[in-house]
Length: 239
Image (tube, rainbow, N blue to C red; front, side, top):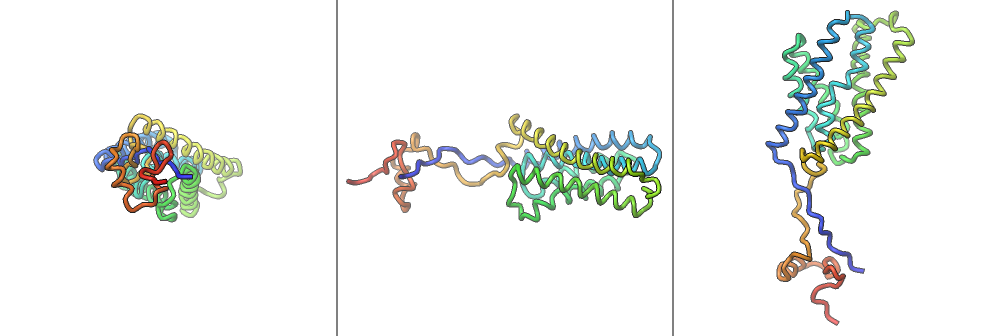
């Protein structure tokens, strides 16, 4: 049997200006959150405990890029909000070091999608890639702290080590769910347009509203079964 023509128009791509402004806003919001966290952690004296807390909560640094990636789903989208978040953090005592850390966070988040050649943007891919990136980033930071001896093995008692790992993993999955939820709400509000595996193809013509001459032109050179009327009959079919 002949298949009916789909009447669903292709989604529109978000304009570059709107895309840039949206990623800037998401990055700035995530950067402000990190500023507040870092300033509050300055009150904690440097110790194995404080650096373990830094390591376990490192995923919060990714919140802006996480939301942007879940919302727009296109190459490079994790880098832009990381840049804006880093710029916001210039106001902190850490300055350029914060900016570099945000860039590294953006690159780490971008890697799983780059490995897949930016062909996988499904929810399943995001639910897999986000936790892996967050846990990997926290693991790298923790290893660096251990090698630099700011986290001392003698002070890293079992409850602290287990707690760091548990909080890191739980926060990774929690931030993944949160970022996807925020992205879905923003999309429903009209930010970012339709689900961002967007297509540049033209909308498929609607047989109910397309003039007969245009329908005939669109079918020219194609098999008769590739275009049917809403009644399921090929136009111009002869007995």
